[in-house]
Length: 226
Figure 1 (cartoon, rainbow, N blue to C red):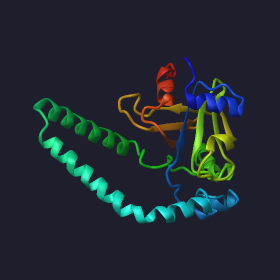
Figure 2 (cartoon, rainbow, N blue to C red):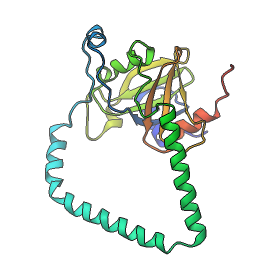
Figure 3 (cartoon, one colour):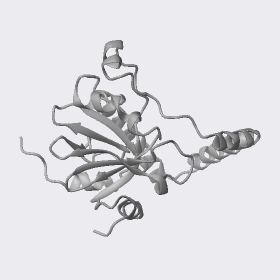
Figure 4 (cartoon, rainbow, N blue to C red):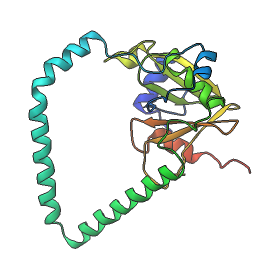
């Protein structure tokens, strides 16, 4: 398969060959117990704040927020009118999509995937999560699947632009320690992937794209032997 643009940039920047890759992020890290936090050296649990220039940009854009909200409301009203005029087949398709979304949400809740990790701070996933922002204070990671395992890259510090130009490898997980998993085996089109460690613990990441290149790579892999 030919590399995607994201893979090509990552391979050129990092000097590694990737089978698949995409930018991803994690949810909010819950507060660990005091003894766990102290044993880990009181690591950072949040990404860094936006750089000053980005904060200035947000302030300058603030007056336009009401206009954007109005445009969004108008767009929603237009969509509602269009739906009321849908043909029978289109209504059935929309109803089927809504049912699919309900099944997906139920599956997420059933597997506790609305949490950032499995909840065991002493497991491999919990220990890795404690070091997540010590590796880099940027809020995103380029996650790359290689033949050797999983590579995570990011700018050392949070940036608002130019993440690709500044990224460097911040963590490596050999295939013997962790694997990528689509928890739904392709049944649902989601952004969710799991980094599953050898002790059974897991960490949820969300990819930038739905059913990303990483999802397709995972689905092409042979099923593990029971």
